[in-house]
Image 1 (cartoon, helix red, strand yellow):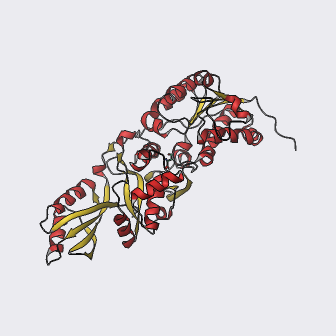
Image 2 (image 1 turned 135 degrees about the vertical axis):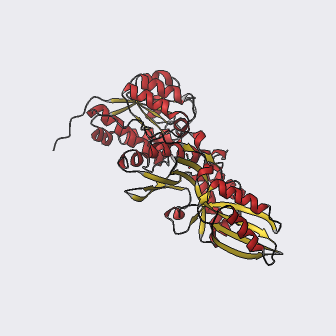
Image 3 (image 1 turned 90 degrees about the horizontal axis):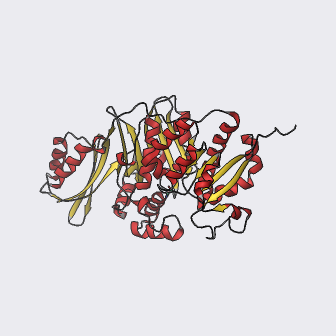
Length: 433
Ligand code: HSE
């Protein structure tokens, strides 16, 4: 059988040459023939824009790719058919992508911060120019989740997304659980092993997961959700004791990105939560990511894999490049922004959740009744109470049924004020039930 004839080569520009960029450049080169067959035209990498050409780069320095390095990103984006942005940060990435789109290029980006902050500007510009914006790599690395939510589930109604979308924090929580270590120790270990950045705050404070939550929520609910709409709490307040108690009560602690439809709108939040050991997300170990989707017709779906790293993220980028390139060769266009539903984006105080409250109380008759009465006064129902002696005091673990977050907050405040309560040790939400 003769090989199909190929169309004229497409010019591909790469912005950024870090861990992901160098892998994208390498794959474009080593898989050149395969990619040409899949697209119907060769993909010519015409330049790699970097801030500093002379810096040594693994996989690039000393190879043919080195000659493609340039500091002139402005000129590069104006002469490309497809621009891949893996430089990160808001500027100059935003201006370069807008310039590329204005010049008629389709763009592929892994830039979650930019999309969560100003995605609609890019989508509108691309729509007007009739080009594609693809961003599979912006959420959960190699895991196909953008395309499933945006396209495969376009005929269904997504009700809720629960995601472990930050590998660094999942690694930290997993090590705390398996080794009984304190958070600080594990963060330091993660930095030594290269799982955590030198400045891990975007990960441990939940902001990286929040950007991903905003992107997923926008797609799932056909409603614009930006980073400012996401209520964020990180993992830094967690103790080894929280993790041990989770295990004692048949649960694990995960940093979850949660986007859900309520009767009044949508709520999007990121915070640590207790997840039953029987839930599929509980088995997501180490630095892996997973996104659990509940849709009204499809039911429950889970997408699992590597959420970071050069090759896994490059795989998602290349998939998008092939899609955009096929449109150049065969005609057609990828999905445009779908924000028609314009559902109200509600504060996290309106989320429906459950909490597990651990309190130190004086060990004498009537204490449990006082705590139960305060919970009931706030219209909150108790699901379970466990008690364990801890020295002179008793440790009560109260788990509630589902209630609104604001009612649960008021309940906890009221518990703090009970005379027989020495202290509220911790309050963790319970999700995935
Ligand atoms: N730092 C992120 C993580 C990967 O730990 O999962 C990039 O979003």
